[in-house]
Length: 362
Ligand code: CP3
Image (cartoon, rainbow, N blue to C red; front, side, top):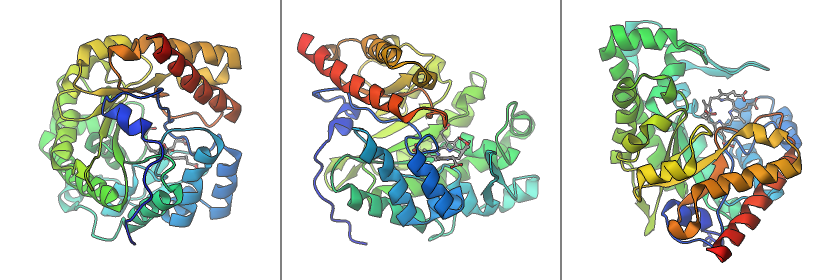
């Protein structure tokens, strides 16, 4: 596919990630394409399953565009899943109706770990094709975000075989056989770096690493088993494409205690969950990184006036834009499937209106 794309008409999101001045605070939502949208549920039913949506670039494009067509969002995110990478390593990803993701062949023993290899070339081509097709369809309306899971978060699913509360399997391995875990993590880091670079080549204009389970780690273990491998990825990432900086966002859910460490690995921005105060976070990371977040997704179950109040409070907690640009508004984690779509409309309008007013008052 050719990679000549239309010029960007709205670069507010990219500017905020690079801590440049913006007329208002840009906003997008983690999992903005998903089951809370009736049009997503219809597409998913048409495709038959989550994986057939994700593996077909036409469907992936259709679903990525749904929230962009409905709301005035400032970024689009590739429709896919973090677990496509271990799937391409041969673990066999599947989704059972009403349940989370599972692997047919989790890493059950030492031999499986020794046999593990990075994905074969071409096995993730459907993702890169989707990126290029989405970027074309966007036609410069807003930037496109590519993404991947962190090596640690991927390893959690690869070892447990599914989501987990206690992470008994992987944490036992971490303390009993750290060498085996480190082998998985190195491989994952290599695979994710290649994967993100290919997304950038295909047209992704920013990338995000989702470390959803980093917050399950002890202090010390987080730095050694999660952060270090995200840094390895950042070291290998292409940070510029066609003369444009490609910003990278790192999001460790539950990582609020480690912001200084996270700000030191070379990311352009940190994602924050709702346990963190944005202004305090900004004071701690200084001018090293932009911040993305961090409204509690449950706010979207409240009434419009209450949503407006909470969104305004989050914007205010960051501090006046004059004191430093560099805020991307988002939720503190993915949007719930039970969210009324009208609540998202209220959120997006409020972020734009209130943040414009803040700049006039600054
Ligand atoms: O943000 C977006 O709109 C882009 C798409 C996206 C999906 N998953 C689509 C999806 C992204 C960025 C992800 C990331 C992802 N996937 C993470 C990291 C972010 C996080 O939430 O912590 C994780 C841990 C996964 C693994 C995963 N995939 C889980 C735990 C689930 C089940 C969750 C649920 O809500 O049921 C999925 C499935 C999934 N990935 C869905 C979507 C829209 C729902 C699938 C469906 O249609 O049934």
